[in-house]
Image 1: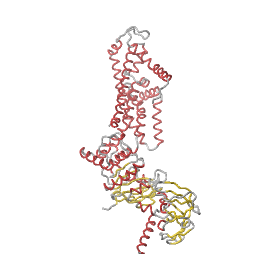
Image 2: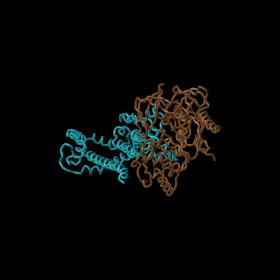
Image 3: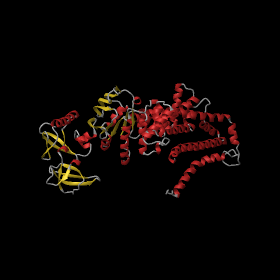
Image 4: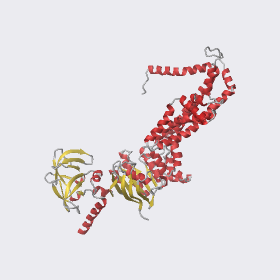
Length: 268
Length: 368
Protein backbone atom coordinates (compact mmCIF):
# COMPACT_ATOMS: atom_id res chain seq x y z
CA UNK A 1 0.00 0.00 0.00
CA UNK A 2 2.38 2.70 1.18
CA UNK A 3 5.15 3.55 -1.18
CA UNK A 4 8.61 2.82 0.16
CA UNK A 5 10.87 5.82 0.06
CA UNK A 6 14.18 5.27 -1.66
CA UNK A 7 17.31 4.72 0.48
CA UNK A 8 18.76 7.96 -0.88
CA UNK A 9 15.85 9.96 0.42
CA UNK A 10 16.30 8.39 3.84
CA UNK A 11 20.03 9.06 3.79
CA UNK A 12 19.43 12.68 2.81
CA UNK A 13 16.95 13.10 5.63
CA UNK A 14 19.39 11.55 8.07
CA UNK A 15 22.21 13.85 7.03
CA UNK A 16 20.03 16.94 7.29
CA UNK A 17 18.83 16.07 10.77
CA UNK A 18 22.35 15.14 11.81
CA UNK A 19 23.69 18.50 10.67
CA UNK A 20 20.89 20.31 12.49
CA UNK A 21 21.05 18.40 15.75
CA UNK A 22 24.76 17.60 16.06
CA UNK A 23 25.80 21.02 17.43
CA UNK A 24 23.05 20.91 20.03
CA UNK A 25 24.06 17.46 21.23
CA UNK A 26 27.72 18.48 21.14
CA UNK A 27 26.83 21.38 23.42
CA UNK A 28 24.82 19.20 25.78
CA UNK A 29 27.53 16.53 25.80
CA UNK A 30 30.18 18.98 27.03
CA UNK A 31 27.89 20.40 29.71
CA UNK A 32 28.80 17.22 31.63
CA UNK A 33 32.56 17.72 31.10
CA UNK A 34 34.63 18.21 34.21
CA UNK A 35 37.50 19.62 32.12
CA UNK A 36 36.07 23.11 31.81
CA UNK A 37 36.57 23.41 28.04
CA UNK A 38 34.89 22.03 24.94
CA UNK A 39 38.11 20.66 23.48
CA UNK A 40 38.53 17.44 25.41
CA UNK A 41 36.16 15.38 27.53
CA UNK A 42 37.83 14.56 30.84
CA UNK A 43 35.15 13.19 33.11
CA UNK A 44 31.47 13.27 33.95
CA UNK A 45 30.28 15.97 36.34
CA UNK A 46 27.11 17.83 37.25
CA UNK A 47 29.11 20.77 38.66
CA UNK A 48 28.01 23.11 35.91
CA UNK A 49 24.39 22.46 36.67
CA UNK A 50 24.98 22.98 40.39
CA UNK A 51 26.70 26.25 39.63
CA UNK A 52 23.83 27.23 37.40
CA UNK A 53 21.22 26.65 40.07
CA UNK A 54 23.21 28.51 42.71
CA UNK A 55 23.44 31.54 40.42
CA UNK A 56 20.38 33.50 41.55
CA UNK A 57 21.04 36.29 39.07
CA UNK A 58 20.73 33.84 36.20
CA UNK A 59 17.60 32.31 37.70
CA UNK A 60 16.01 35.73 37.95
CA UNK A 61 16.85 36.31 34.31
CA UNK A 62 15.20 33.01 33.41
CA UNK A 63 12.15 34.11 35.35
CA UNK A 64 12.17 37.50 33.59
CA UNK A 65 12.30 35.78 30.23
CA UNK A 66 9.38 33.51 31.05
CA UNK A 67 7.29 36.36 32.48
CA UNK A 68 7.96 38.53 29.45
CA UNK A 69 7.13 35.67 27.10
CA UNK A 70 3.88 34.69 28.83
CA UNK A 71 2.68 38.26 29.29
CA UNK A 72 3.55 39.42 25.81
CA UNK A 73 2.05 36.29 24.25
CA UNK A 74 -1.15 36.73 26.24
CA UNK A 75 -1.60 40.42 25.49
CA UNK A 76 -0.60 40.12 21.84
CA UNK A 77 -2.99 37.20 21.40
CA UNK A 78 -5.89 39.26 22.71
CA UNK A 79 -5.02 42.25 20.54
CA UNK A 80 -4.17 40.08 17.54
CA UNK A 81 -7.45 38.15 17.67
CA UNK A 82 -9.50 41.33 17.69
CA UNK A 83 -7.31 42.73 14.95
CA UNK A 84 -7.91 39.68 12.80
CA UNK A 85 -11.67 39.90 13.40
CA UNK A 86 -11.51 43.56 12.44
CA UNK A 87 -9.65 42.78 9.24
CA UNK A 88 -12.22 40.14 8.34
CA UNK A 89 -15.11 42.51 8.93
CA UNK A 90 -13.68 45.09 6.54
CA UNK A 91 -16.09 45.72 3.71
CA UNK A 92 -13.63 46.58 0.98
CA UNK A 93 -11.25 43.94 -0.26
CA UNK A 94 -8.64 46.59 -1.01
CA UNK A 95 -8.50 47.96 2.53
CA UNK A 96 -8.33 44.42 3.82
CA UNK A 97 -5.38 43.61 1.61
CA UNK A 98 -3.50 46.79 2.43
CA UNK A 99 -3.90 46.25 6.18
CA UNK A 100 -2.79 42.66 5.75
CA UNK A 101 0.18 43.89 3.72
CA UNK A 102 1.20 46.28 6.50
CA UNK A 103 0.88 43.40 8.93
CA UNK A 104 3.10 41.14 6.86
CA UNK A 105 5.77 43.81 6.38
CA UNK A 106 6.25 43.80 10.16
CA UNK A 107 6.84 40.05 10.10
CA UNK A 108 9.41 40.02 7.34
CA UNK A 109 11.26 43.22 8.27
CA UNK A 110 14.57 42.49 10.03
CA UNK A 111 14.55 42.42 13.83
CA UNK A 112 17.44 44.84 13.89
CA UNK A 113 15.34 47.53 12.24
CA UNK A 114 12.39 46.87 14.52
CA UNK A 115 14.70 46.92 17.56
CA UNK A 116 16.40 50.11 16.52
CA UNK A 117 13.15 51.87 15.74
CA UNK A 118 11.71 50.85 19.11
CA UNK A 119 14.84 52.20 20.79
CA UNK A 120 14.35 55.54 19.04
CA UNK A 121 10.63 55.54 19.90
CA UNK A 122 11.20 54.75 23.58
CA UNK A 123 13.93 57.34 24.01
CA UNK A 124 11.85 59.97 22.25
CA UNK A 125 8.75 59.10 24.26
CA UNK A 126 10.81 59.13 27.44
CA UNK A 127 9.99 55.56 28.41
CA UNK A 128 12.67 54.09 30.64
CA UNK A 129 14.41 51.08 29.13
CA UNK A 130 13.83 47.94 31.13
CA UNK A 131 10.97 45.51 31.79
CA UNK A 132 8.20 47.62 30.25
CA UNK A 133 10.11 48.60 27.14
CA UNK A 134 10.97 44.95 26.49
CA UNK A 135 7.40 43.86 27.17
CA UNK A 136 5.93 46.52 24.89
CA UNK A 137 8.25 45.69 22.03
CA UNK A 138 7.62 41.96 22.39
CA UNK A 139 3.87 42.56 22.32
CA UNK A 140 4.33 44.72 19.25
CA UNK A 141 6.25 42.20 17.20
CA UNK A 142 4.02 39.32 18.32
CA UNK A 143 0.72 40.88 17.23
CA UNK A 144 1.32 40.45 13.48
CA UNK A 145 2.23 36.81 14.09
CA UNK A 146 -1.01 36.18 15.98
CA UNK A 147 -3.00 37.94 13.26
CA UNK A 148 -1.37 35.74 10.66
CA UNK A 149 -2.16 32.58 12.59
CA UNK A 150 -5.78 33.49 13.39
CA UNK A 151 -6.89 35.05 10.12
CA UNK A 152 -6.94 31.86 7.98
CA UNK A 153 -9.23 30.19 10.50
CA UNK A 154 -11.52 33.22 10.44
CA UNK A 155 -11.56 33.35 6.67
CA UNK A 156 -12.40 29.67 6.48
CA UNK A 157 -15.48 30.27 8.63
CA UNK A 158 -18.64 30.44 6.53
CA UNK A 159 -20.32 33.86 6.87
CA UNK A 160 -23.65 32.06 7.13
CA UNK A 161 -22.55 30.82 10.58
CA UNK A 162 -22.68 34.39 11.83
CA UNK A 163 -25.97 35.02 10.05
CA UNK A 164 -27.33 31.83 11.60
CA UNK A 165 -26.35 32.94 15.09
CA UNK A 166 -28.00 36.36 14.57
CA UNK A 167 -31.01 34.59 13.14
CA UNK A 168 -31.32 32.50 16.30
CA UNK A 169 -31.40 35.63 18.40
CA UNK A 170 -27.75 36.12 19.27
CA UNK A 171 -26.50 39.65 19.94
CA UNK A 172 -23.12 40.74 18.55
CA UNK A 173 -21.49 39.80 21.84
CA UNK A 174 -23.14 36.36 21.79
CA UNK A 175 -21.94 35.84 18.25
CA UNK A 176 -18.40 36.67 19.28
CA UNK A 177 -18.29 34.50 22.39
CA UNK A 178 -20.47 31.61 21.30
CA UNK A 179 -19.59 31.26 17.64
CA UNK A 180 -16.51 33.11 16.46
CA UNK A 181 -14.15 32.51 19.38
CA UNK A 182 -14.91 28.78 19.78
CA UNK A 183 -14.52 28.33 16.04
CA UNK A 184 -11.09 29.96 15.87
CA UNK A 185 -9.76 28.48 19.13
CA UNK A 186 -7.16 26.29 17.38
CA UNK A 187 -5.88 29.38 15.57
CA UNK A 188 -5.75 31.32 18.84
CA UNK A 189 -3.70 28.57 20.49
CA UNK A 190 -1.36 28.37 17.55
CA UNK A 191 -0.94 32.14 17.63
CA UNK A 192 -0.30 32.14 21.37
CA UNK A 193 2.37 29.44 21.16
CA UNK A 194 3.96 31.13 18.16
CA UNK A 195 4.11 34.43 20.05
CA UNK A 196 5.49 32.62 23.08
CA UNK A 197 8.37 31.03 21.16
CA UNK A 198 9.13 34.23 19.25
CA UNK A 199 9.34 36.12 22.51
CA UNK A 200 11.40 33.43 24.26
CA UNK A 201 14.13 33.33 21.67
CA UNK A 202 14.14 36.94 20.57
CA UNK A 203 17.57 38.45 20.77
CA UNK A 204 17.86 41.39 18.40
CA UNK A 205 14.88 43.46 19.51
CA UNK A 206 15.47 42.78 23.21
CA UNK A 207 19.12 43.66 22.85
CA UNK A 208 18.16 47.13 21.64
CA UNK A 209 15.44 48.01 24.10
CA UNK A 210 16.70 46.46 27.31
CA UNK A 211 18.55 48.45 29.94
CA UNK A 212 18.88 49.33 33.61
CA UNK A 213 20.10 45.87 34.48
CA UNK A 214 17.04 44.14 33.03
CA UNK A 215 18.02 41.21 30.85
CA UNK A 216 16.57 38.16 29.19
CA UNK A 217 18.17 34.79 28.58
CA UNK A 218 19.18 35.30 24.98
CA UNK A 219 20.84 38.62 25.77
CA UNK A 220 22.50 37.17 28.86
CA UNK A 221 23.85 34.13 27.03
CA UNK A 222 25.23 36.43 24.37
CA UNK A 223 27.12 38.52 26.91
CA UNK A 224 28.33 35.43 28.79
CA UNK A 225 29.63 33.95 25.56
CA UNK A 226 31.51 37.16 24.85
CA UNK A 227 33.27 36.99 28.20
CA UNK A 228 34.69 33.61 27.33
CA UNK A 229 33.54 30.08 27.13
CA UNK A 230 32.11 28.78 30.33
CA UNK A 231 30.36 25.43 30.46
CA UNK A 232 27.64 27.22 32.46
CA UNK A 233 26.19 28.21 29.12
CA UNK A 234 26.23 24.63 27.96
CA UNK A 235 24.33 23.54 31.03
CA UNK A 236 21.80 26.33 30.56
CA UNK A 237 21.37 25.50 26.86
CA UNK A 238 20.88 21.84 27.69
CA UNK A 239 18.11 22.72 30.13
CA UNK A 240 16.42 25.05 27.66
CA UNK A 241 16.58 22.35 25.01
CA UNK A 242 15.01 19.88 27.43
CA UNK A 243 12.21 22.29 28.26
CA UNK A 244 11.61 22.90 24.57
CA UNK A 245 11.37 19.18 23.86
CA UNK A 246 8.92 18.74 26.72
CA UNK A 247 6.84 21.65 25.42
CA UNK A 248 6.75 20.15 21.95
CA UNK A 249 5.64 16.80 23.34
CA UNK A 250 2.95 18.44 25.45
CA UNK A 251 1.72 20.45 22.47
CA UNK A 252 1.65 17.28 20.39
CA UNK A 253 -0.46 15.46 22.95
CA UNK A 254 -2.84 18.36 23.38
CA UNK A 255 -3.44 18.65 19.67
CA UNK A 256 -3.80 14.87 19.34
CA UNK A 257 -6.37 14.80 22.11
CA UNK A 258 -8.30 17.62 20.47
CA UNK A 259 -8.29 15.60 17.25
CA UNK A 260 -9.38 12.47 19.09
CA UNK A 261 -12.48 14.08 20.51
CA UNK A 262 -14.00 14.14 17.07
CA UNK A 263 -13.01 10.56 16.38
CA UNK A 264 -14.71 9.47 19.60
CA UNK A 265 -18.11 10.30 18.16
CA UNK A 266 -17.28 8.37 15.00
CA UNK A 267 -16.52 5.20 16.90
CA UNK A 268 -19.83 5.21 18.69
CA UNK B 1 -56.35 39.97 12.66
CA UNK B 2 -55.50 39.86 9.01
CA UNK B 3 -54.09 36.79 7.43
CA UNK B 4 -51.15 38.65 5.96
CA UNK B 5 -47.93 38.09 7.84
CA UNK B 6 -45.30 39.62 5.58
CA UNK B 7 -45.77 42.46 3.19
CA UNK B 8 -43.29 44.08 0.80
CA UNK B 9 -44.14 47.58 -0.44
CA UNK B 10 -42.12 48.74 -3.44
CA UNK B 11 -38.92 47.27 -2.07
CA UNK B 12 -35.75 47.98 -4.01
CA UNK B 13 -32.31 46.65 -3.21
CA UNK B 14 -29.14 47.88 -4.83
CA UNK B 15 -25.50 47.43 -3.85
CA UNK B 16 -23.43 50.56 -4.50
CA UNK B 17 -23.62 51.27 -8.20
CA UNK B 18 -24.29 47.74 -9.35
CA UNK B 19 -27.52 47.01 -11.20
CA UNK B 20 -30.55 46.65 -8.94
CA UNK B 21 -30.98 43.25 -7.34
CA UNK B 22 -34.61 43.79 -6.47
CA UNK B 23 -36.59 46.23 -8.57
CA UNK B 24 -39.60 47.76 -6.85
CA UNK B 25 -41.04 44.51 -5.57
CA UNK B 26 -44.39 44.30 -3.78
CA UNK B 27 -46.13 41.21 -2.50
CA UNK B 28 -47.98 39.77 0.44
CA UNK B 29 -47.44 36.52 2.25
CA UNK B 30 -50.24 34.83 4.12
CA UNK B 31 -50.02 32.94 7.37
CA UNK B 32 -49.63 29.19 7.36
CA UNK B 33 -48.91 28.62 3.67
CA UNK B 34 -45.98 27.13 1.83
CA UNK B 35 -44.46 29.72 -0.48
CA UNK B 36 -41.72 29.22 -3.02
CA UNK B 37 -39.53 31.90 -4.54
CA UNK B 38 -38.43 30.43 -7.84
CA UNK B 39 -35.98 31.82 -10.33
CA UNK B 40 -32.58 31.43 -11.94
CA UNK B 41 -29.50 32.32 -9.93
CA UNK B 42 -29.08 36.05 -9.52
CA UNK B 43 -32.80 36.78 -9.87
CA UNK B 44 -33.04 38.24 -6.37
CA UNK B 45 -34.82 35.40 -4.59
CA UNK B 46 -32.17 34.96 -1.93
CA UNK B 47 -32.10 38.75 -1.46
CA UNK B 48 -35.81 38.69 -0.59
CA UNK B 49 -35.08 36.00 1.98
CA UNK B 50 -32.20 37.98 3.47
CA UNK B 51 -34.41 41.06 3.66
CA UNK B 52 -37.07 39.14 5.57
CA UNK B 53 -34.46 37.61 7.88
CA UNK B 54 -32.82 40.98 8.42
CA UNK B 55 -29.32 40.15 7.15
CA UNK B 56 -29.48 43.02 4.71
CA UNK B 57 -31.37 46.28 4.46
CA UNK B 58 -33.65 47.50 1.71
CA UNK B 59 -32.41 50.47 -0.29
CA UNK B 60 -35.97 51.77 -0.45
CA UNK B 61 -39.49 50.56 0.26
CA UNK B 62 -41.12 49.11 3.33
CA UNK B 63 -41.22 45.62 4.75
CA UNK B 64 -44.02 44.79 7.17
CA UNK B 65 -44.22 41.82 9.52
CA UNK B 66 -47.55 41.39 11.30
CA UNK B 67 -48.44 44.94 10.18
CA UNK B 68 -45.36 46.38 11.89
CA UNK B 69 -42.63 47.94 9.83
CA UNK B 70 -39.46 45.93 10.37
CA UNK B 71 -36.95 47.67 8.09
CA UNK B 72 -34.82 48.75 11.06
CA UNK B 73 -35.26 45.75 13.33
CA UNK B 74 -32.05 43.69 13.55
CA UNK B 75 -32.05 40.01 12.61
CA UNK B 76 -31.81 38.76 16.18
CA UNK B 77 -35.06 40.52 17.13
CA UNK B 78 -37.15 39.10 14.29
CA UNK B 79 -39.54 36.20 14.67
CA UNK B 80 -38.23 34.30 11.69
CA UNK B 81 -35.68 31.54 11.48
CA UNK B 82 -33.63 30.48 8.53
CA UNK B 83 -32.43 27.15 7.20
CA UNK B 84 -29.29 27.93 5.25
CA UNK B 85 -28.07 26.44 2.01
CA UNK B 86 -24.89 25.19 3.68
CA UNK B 87 -26.91 24.45 6.87
CA UNK B 88 -24.58 26.75 8.89
CA UNK B 89 -24.47 24.32 11.79
CA UNK B 90 -21.97 25.22 14.49
CA UNK B 91 -19.11 22.73 14.13
CA UNK B 92 -17.94 23.13 17.74
CA UNK B 93 -21.32 22.10 19.15
CA UNK B 94 -23.01 18.71 19.03
CA UNK B 95 -26.48 18.10 17.66
CA UNK B 96 -28.25 18.86 20.92
CA UNK B 97 -26.40 22.13 21.52
CA UNK B 98 -26.88 23.22 17.92
CA UNK B 99 -30.63 22.85 18.23
CA UNK B 100 -30.57 24.40 21.71
CA UNK B 101 -28.56 27.44 20.57
CA UNK B 102 -31.52 29.79 20.21
CA UNK B 103 -33.10 28.62 23.49
CA UNK B 104 -29.84 29.09 25.39
CA UNK B 105 -29.60 32.63 24.05
CA UNK B 106 -33.06 33.24 25.48
CA UNK B 107 -31.73 31.91 28.81
CA UNK B 108 -34.39 29.23 28.99
CA UNK B 109 -34.22 26.76 31.89
CA UNK B 110 -32.30 23.55 31.29
CA UNK B 111 -35.32 21.30 31.69
CA UNK B 112 -37.39 23.26 29.21
CA UNK B 113 -34.49 23.33 26.77
CA UNK B 114 -34.18 19.59 26.96
CA UNK B 115 -37.89 19.00 26.40
CA UNK B 116 -38.08 21.40 23.46
CA UNK B 117 -34.95 20.09 21.76
CA UNK B 118 -36.21 16.53 22.10
CA UNK B 119 -39.53 17.54 20.60
CA UNK B 120 -37.88 19.34 17.69
CA UNK B 121 -35.58 16.40 17.03
CA UNK B 122 -38.51 14.00 17.06
CA UNK B 123 -40.22 16.18 14.45
CA UNK B 124 -37.31 15.57 12.09
CA UNK B 125 -36.83 11.92 13.14
CA UNK B 126 -33.47 12.48 14.80
CA UNK B 127 -34.19 11.31 18.34
CA UNK B 128 -31.19 9.49 19.74
CA UNK B 129 -28.68 11.58 17.80
CA UNK B 130 -28.40 14.31 20.47
CA UNK B 131 -24.78 13.67 21.43
CA UNK B 132 -23.44 13.24 17.89
CA UNK B 133 -20.92 15.71 16.54
CA UNK B 134 -21.97 17.56 13.40
CA UNK B 135 -19.02 16.18 11.43
CA UNK B 136 -20.30 12.66 12.03
CA UNK B 137 -23.69 13.40 10.47
CA UNK B 138 -24.53 12.78 6.81
CA UNK B 139 -25.78 15.53 4.51
CA UNK B 140 -29.41 14.56 4.97
CA UNK B 141 -29.05 14.39 8.73
CA UNK B 142 -27.37 17.79 8.87
CA UNK B 143 -30.29 19.12 6.88
CA UNK B 144 -32.67 17.80 9.52
CA UNK B 145 -30.61 19.28 12.35
CA UNK B 146 -30.77 22.66 10.61
CA UNK B 147 -34.55 22.37 10.30
CA UNK B 148 -34.88 21.30 13.95
CA UNK B 149 -32.74 24.27 14.98
CA UNK B 150 -35.14 26.57 13.16
CA UNK B 151 -38.43 25.09 14.37
CA UNK B 152 -37.40 24.75 18.01
CA UNK B 153 -37.69 28.54 18.40
CA UNK B 154 -41.33 28.38 17.30
CA UNK B 155 -40.99 31.19 14.77
CA UNK B 156 -43.97 32.46 12.78
CA UNK B 157 -42.08 32.08 9.53
CA UNK B 158 -39.34 29.71 8.46
CA UNK B 159 -37.12 30.74 5.59
CA UNK B 160 -35.39 28.01 3.61
CA UNK B 161 -32.56 29.02 1.30
CA UNK B 162 -32.14 26.25 -1.27
CA UNK B 163 -31.82 23.72 1.54
CA UNK B 164 -32.09 20.66 -0.68
CA UNK B 165 -29.60 21.62 -3.37
CA UNK B 166 -26.70 19.76 -1.76
CA UNK B 167 -28.55 16.46 -1.44
CA UNK B 168 -28.60 13.67 -3.99
CA UNK B 169 -31.72 13.14 -6.07
CA UNK B 170 -33.34 10.37 -4.07
CA UNK B 171 -32.82 12.08 -0.73
CA UNK B 172 -34.05 15.33 -2.24
CA UNK B 173 -37.36 13.75 -3.25
CA UNK B 174 -37.73 12.28 0.20
CA UNK B 175 -36.96 15.60 1.93
CA UNK B 176 -39.40 17.43 -0.35
CA UNK B 177 -42.17 15.24 0.96
CA UNK B 178 -40.99 15.52 4.54
CA UNK B 179 -40.70 19.30 4.41
CA UNK B 180 -44.18 19.66 2.97
CA UNK B 181 -45.51 17.30 5.60
CA UNK B 182 -43.68 19.15 8.38
CA UNK B 183 -45.11 22.47 7.23
CA UNK B 184 -48.64 21.04 7.36
CA UNK B 185 -48.13 19.60 10.83
CA UNK B 186 -46.59 22.77 12.27
CA UNK B 187 -48.98 25.07 10.45
CA UNK B 188 -46.42 27.84 10.16
CA UNK B 189 -45.43 29.79 7.08
CA UNK B 190 -42.59 28.38 5.02
CA UNK B 191 -40.80 30.52 2.47
CA UNK B 192 -38.70 28.29 0.31
CA UNK B 193 -36.12 29.49 -2.19
CA UNK B 194 -35.13 27.31 -5.10
CA UNK B 195 -34.07 27.33 -8.71
CA UNK B 196 -35.54 23.88 -9.24
CA UNK B 197 -38.96 24.27 -10.86
CA UNK B 198 -39.92 20.67 -10.21
CA UNK B 199 -39.29 21.16 -6.49
CA UNK B 200 -41.37 24.33 -6.52
CA UNK B 201 -44.30 22.70 -8.31
CA UNK B 202 -44.30 19.71 -6.00
CA UNK B 203 -44.16 21.49 -2.67
CA UNK B 204 -45.79 24.91 -2.83
CA UNK B 205 -49.16 26.40 -2.11
CA UNK B 206 -48.04 29.49 -3.91
CA UNK B 207 -45.09 30.22 -6.22
CA UNK B 208 -43.44 33.55 -7.00
CA UNK B 209 -41.46 33.32 -10.21
CA UNK B 210 -38.66 35.87 -10.24
CA UNK B 211 -36.36 37.10 -12.93
CA UNK B 212 -33.96 40.05 -12.98
CA UNK B 213 -35.20 41.42 -9.67
CA UNK B 214 -38.87 41.44 -10.58
CA UNK B 215 -41.69 39.09 -9.75
CA UNK B 216 -42.83 37.76 -13.13
CA UNK B 217 -45.82 35.83 -11.93
CA UNK B 218 -47.34 34.56 -8.73
CA UNK B 219 -49.93 31.89 -8.25
CA UNK B 220 -50.58 28.29 -7.44
CA UNK B 221 -48.34 25.70 -9.13
CA UNK B 222 -51.17 24.72 -11.45
CA UNK B 223 -51.87 28.33 -12.47
CA UNK B 224 -48.25 28.95 -13.22
CA UNK B 225 -47.74 25.77 -15.12
CA UNK B 226 -50.92 26.00 -17.16
CA UNK B 227 -51.10 29.75 -17.66
CA UNK B 228 -47.61 31.20 -17.80
CA UNK B 229 -47.67 34.96 -18.22
CA UNK B 230 -44.74 35.30 -20.57
CA UNK B 231 -41.99 33.55 -22.44
CA UNK B 232 -39.65 33.52 -19.45
CA UNK B 233 -42.11 31.78 -17.13
CA UNK B 234 -43.24 29.34 -19.81
CA UNK B 235 -39.65 28.47 -20.55
CA UNK B 236 -38.49 28.28 -16.94
CA UNK B 237 -41.37 26.20 -15.61
CA UNK B 238 -41.47 22.85 -17.29
CA UNK B 239 -40.76 22.31 -20.94
CA UNK B 240 -42.71 24.10 -23.58
CA UNK B 241 -43.11 24.84 -27.24
CA UNK B 242 -43.25 28.61 -27.71
CA UNK B 243 -44.19 29.85 -31.17
CA UNK B 244 -44.93 33.33 -32.50
CA UNK B 245 -48.44 33.80 -33.82
CA UNK B 246 -51.26 36.22 -34.41
CA UNK B 247 -54.53 36.56 -32.56
CA UNK B 248 -56.94 36.85 -35.49
CA UNK B 249 -60.00 37.39 -33.32
CA UNK B 250 -61.45 36.02 -30.08
CA UNK B 251 -61.08 32.24 -29.93
CA UNK B 252 -59.08 32.10 -33.18
CA UNK B 253 -55.32 32.12 -33.33
CA UNK B 254 -52.91 31.72 -36.22
CA UNK B 255 -49.49 30.10 -36.02
CA UNK B 256 -47.39 27.86 -38.18
CA UNK B 257 -49.32 29.18 -41.16
CA UNK B 258 -52.64 27.80 -39.94
CA UNK B 259 -55.60 29.01 -37.92
CA UNK B 260 -56.67 27.14 -34.83
CA UNK B 261 -59.57 27.34 -32.47
CA UNK B 262 -58.55 28.33 -28.96
CA UNK B 263 -60.11 29.45 -25.65
CA UNK B 264 -58.42 32.85 -25.31
CA UNK B 265 -60.09 36.16 -25.88
CA UNK B 266 -59.99 39.82 -25.04
CA UNK B 267 -57.07 40.82 -27.26
CA UNK B 268 -56.97 43.24 -30.16
CA UNK B 269 -57.74 41.75 -33.57
CA UNK B 270 -54.58 40.67 -35.42
CA UNK B 271 -52.43 41.31 -32.38
CA UNK B 272 -49.03 39.58 -32.54
CA UNK B 273 -48.76 37.10 -29.67
CA UNK B 274 -46.85 34.03 -28.61
CA UNK B 275 -48.49 30.70 -27.97
CA UNK B 276 -47.40 27.94 -25.63
CA UNK B 277 -48.18 24.26 -26.01
CA UNK B 278 -46.80 21.86 -23.43
CA UNK B 279 -45.04 18.82 -24.96
CA UNK B 280 -47.35 16.41 -23.14
CA UNK B 281 -50.41 18.05 -24.72
CA UNK B 282 -49.23 17.11 -28.20
CA UNK B 283 -50.44 13.74 -29.44
CA UNK B 284 -48.89 11.84 -32.29
CA UNK B 285 -51.28 10.91 -35.10
CA UNK B 286 -50.85 9.99 -38.72
CA UNK B 287 -49.31 12.58 -41.00
CA UNK B 288 -52.54 13.20 -42.87
CA UNK B 289 -54.80 13.70 -39.89
CA UNK B 290 -52.33 15.88 -37.94
CA UNK B 291 -53.17 19.48 -37.18
CA UNK B 292 -49.45 20.15 -37.32
CA UNK B 293 -47.11 18.19 -39.53
CA UNK B 294 -43.52 17.75 -38.44
CA UNK B 295 -40.47 15.83 -39.49
CA UNK B 296 -38.82 14.03 -36.58
CA UNK B 297 -35.23 15.16 -36.03
CA UNK B 298 -34.37 13.39 -32.80
CA UNK B 299 -35.80 11.05 -30.23
CA UNK B 300 -34.64 10.43 -26.66
CA UNK B 301 -35.90 7.71 -24.35
CA UNK B 302 -36.67 9.29 -20.95
CA UNK B 303 -38.02 6.27 -19.13
CA UNK B 304 -41.60 7.44 -18.64
CA UNK B 305 -41.90 8.81 -22.16
CA UNK B 306 -40.10 9.46 -25.41
CA UNK B 307 -38.90 12.97 -26.00
CA UNK B 308 -39.35 13.62 -29.68
CA UNK B 309 -38.16 16.73 -31.45
CA UNK B 310 -39.37 17.71 -34.90
CA UNK B 311 -39.49 20.65 -37.29
CA UNK B 312 -42.55 21.90 -39.16
CA UNK B 313 -42.38 23.42 -42.65
CA UNK B 314 -42.05 26.94 -41.15
CA UNK B 315 -38.91 25.94 -39.30
CA UNK B 316 -40.54 25.98 -35.83
CA UNK B 317 -39.19 23.33 -33.53
CA UNK B 318 -41.73 21.16 -31.68
CA UNK B 319 -41.04 19.09 -28.59
CA UNK B 320 -43.37 16.16 -27.98
CA UNK B 321 -43.61 13.91 -24.94
CA UNK B 322 -45.24 10.70 -26.01
CA UNK B 323 -45.39 7.10 -24.97
CA UNK B 324 -45.55 6.27 -28.69
CA UNK B 325 -42.35 5.75 -30.58
CA UNK B 326 -41.30 7.56 -33.71
CA UNK B 327 -38.33 7.24 -36.01
CA UNK B 328 -35.92 9.95 -36.91
CA UNK B 329 -36.82 11.16 -40.38
CA UNK B 330 -40.46 10.10 -40.06
CA UNK B 331 -43.13 12.58 -41.00
CA UNK B 332 -45.81 12.62 -38.34
CA UNK B 333 -48.88 14.62 -37.52
CA UNK B 334 -49.62 16.22 -34.17
CA UNK B 335 -53.02 16.64 -32.60
CA UNK B 336 -53.98 18.94 -29.74
CA UNK B 337 -57.10 20.33 -28.10
CA UNK B 338 -58.09 24.02 -28.15
CA UNK B 339 -57.48 24.12 -24.38
CA UNK B 340 -53.86 23.10 -24.90
CA UNK B 341 -53.11 26.40 -26.62
CA UNK B 342 -52.14 29.11 -24.19
CA UNK B 343 -51.80 32.62 -25.59
CA UNK B 344 -49.30 35.11 -24.15
CA UNK B 345 -49.37 38.82 -25.00
CA UNK B 346 -46.15 40.77 -25.11
CA UNK B 347 -45.32 42.95 -22.09
CA UNK B 348 -48.54 42.21 -20.27
CA UNK B 349 -48.49 43.14 -16.60
CA UNK B 350 -49.55 40.61 -14.03
CA UNK B 351 -52.69 42.56 -13.12
CA UNK B 352 -53.85 42.75 -16.74
CA UNK B 353 -53.04 39.09 -17.19
CA UNK B 354 -55.05 38.09 -14.14
CA UNK B 355 -57.95 40.28 -15.22
CA UNK B 356 -57.94 38.70 -18.68
CA UNK B 357 -57.94 35.18 -17.27
CA UNK B 358 -60.68 36.07 -14.85
CA UNK B 359 -62.87 37.38 -17.66
CA UNK B 360 -62.65 33.93 -19.30
CA UNK B 361 -64.20 32.17 -16.35
CA UNK B 362 -66.87 34.89 -16.13
CA UNK B 363 -67.50 34.37 -19.82
CA UNK B 364 -67.91 30.68 -19.25
CA UNK B 365 -70.30 31.34 -16.42
CA UNK B 366 -72.32 33.65 -18.66
CA UNK B 367 -72.41 31.08 -21.38
CA UNK B 368 -73.85 28.43 -19.16
